[in-house]
Length: 180
Image 1 (cartoon, rainbow, N blue to C red):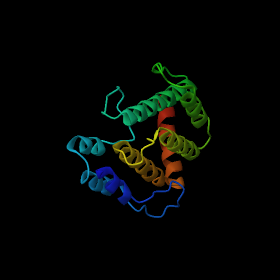
Image 2 (image 1 turned 90 degrees about the vertical axis):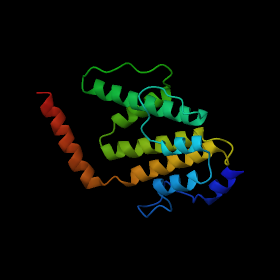
Image 3 (image 1 turned 90 degrees about the horizontal axis):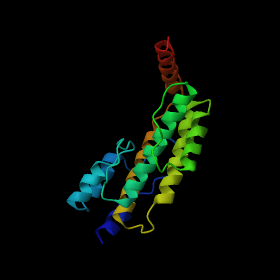
């Protein structure tokens, strides 16, 4: 019953809105959620991250474990494809990586614009999150899914075209100079 009251208080967040302020940020979300959930769930909410650990670790939630596994596999696929593109050694892909993850990574790496690649990966991650989202909208996993979506939207809103181009060229030049 506590999840119903929590989830009914969470404002709708749209991934399509402009750069206007979100009705809630990650810190506020975590503070609100922690008023309604158990100590164990608080630890999980407070440790939500868009960057999973490199090693498989159980969170205690099948939903989160699946999300983190897919995100980890996407990051490994991106790293391998980028390394191959630069003719560098790469680590082997983990077992269980799916064709859609490899396809998404190839598409993103093949894009000319880093911002376009980030937008593509953002859309891919949102679709994946929607696909994995629990059927019960008033479960603890729905709370976790909300937190991840909020974090994705916040992250994407931080991108600025001109600052990104400048940073990209600096990093790229550094990489090329390091190969000499």
